[in-house]
Length: 280
Image (cartoon, rainbow, N blue to C red):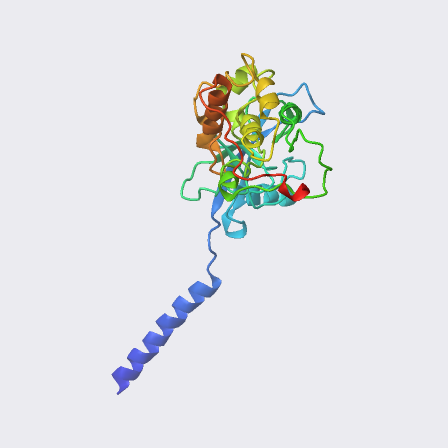
């Protein structure tokens, strides 16, 4: 009995030692390094630098945007970047992360690697500050394609809706989902070299979205505006655009379809129903 009591006391002592270790032991922080492009227009004589920040991943969300917000809030309020929806809808947080153009809110932090994540603004664009690219040219080109429904009839705008057959509507799938983040255009070497004249994958995909819309009646005018050496034909089907699109779209295919329409190999099919039937 005495031996059993002594064994019981020894077991309780060992248990208390283990319990105290777990209660008082310090869990080491899981640190991830981020090497971020920094440039300040207020000091134009200073060259851009890569600045490294350390983030405790036990206290941070899983996405790169979570880390950027945490760095800005807790370490360096001067860090500049765009963000809005945090759901891959607005396209604001587009940047180059570890060599790939993507959205920071959809890019998961690689915690399995000890190397730092390298973050840059979208390539081959003027930089406003840090990770903020100048999108002026991009949206100017988007405006050039007149991205709205255009008709040749004189029906009063807004009085009735224009009808569309379900099969015609399906042709817009994979086109209308574009969020104009510019990841595809800034990954395209042809756009790097000729961005002043070549419209780029994102804008051309949106142009095709309106050309192929059965309710739009100005497809010929839209095509004629691109009959030159640069607007469309600078595309050499490198397909970086399709590979990098964070929404899984295929701008390269849309550009190929525009080329077929321009060459006359195919023509836009007629609507399967009277789109202006409700006006009668």
